[in-house]
Image (cartoon, rainbow, N blue to C red; front, side, top):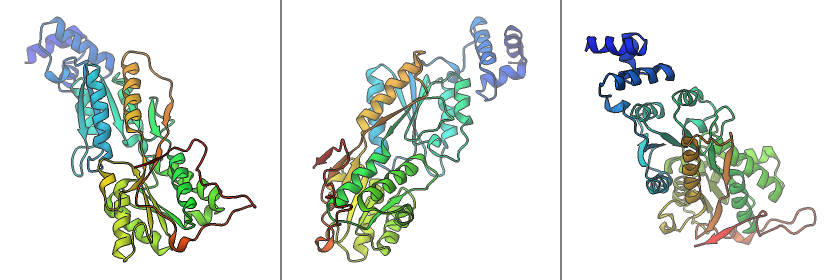
Length: 362
């Protein structure tokens, strides 16, 4: 083995230690140096380790946990699109106590992934270090990012319009007569959360005349889980809210549970709106009114953008923003006692939603 390392090192013009680092898939080796070592392996007739063999068809998909049905649904769309293009999709999902995004990325790079799609990853966390994505550029691994935008990362982004989504939800609820509308979200450090807050504040200011300070009292942060939605909704119900908009369908189910534990009915006493339109959510009790994320469009655009990157035709540093739609089902109804907000400035309150509103009724 030592003799082989010496031969390869001499051929590549590097040290044996560097050859060993390349063969073992260690980070921190310059891309040109790595290429020289691999070329030396090929010229001398040595078989590359499996992780270093070219796999131009392999495309990684890195997601958070799969408990939220939205992520498997998006993975299915992306996987099907990649398969139709002759690519091999590899799903790398995080889990509590399991592999991190960085570890999964290293695994994909070590196995020769030709590109990677990240869904709701560290790029969406405004407190996270973006150097991990710079390293991918150094490794010459193209990538696309879904949900969350950072001006510091040079890559295509694909996102739903979170601000418009909140305008859809608030407009629907005010048309039903609700004037105390709460917002249940995950941690504020995430870009989609910040955008939802901006959209919510703007909508309640326009629809109800609430200043920023009053709107802030109607916002509660928790976790993107059923339990998180239950906790956030409980605090909002204490604030006298008759409607709760949630940042995920799982949180919305927690909000329904919170209302029922107080002896309140949904939608008779409390209206609840989710976010995602996860599979089977139409069959909950009651069927959930929700904001439908454009999963099909998002997945298809992400794959197309990645193919352009892999073909050497990188997109400009931009974000593809896809419009969501409101799906009205059985978890929203008129405010209790038929109360309706008064018109402001002498004008009738609009009930048809913002410009471009699309409302689906299941």
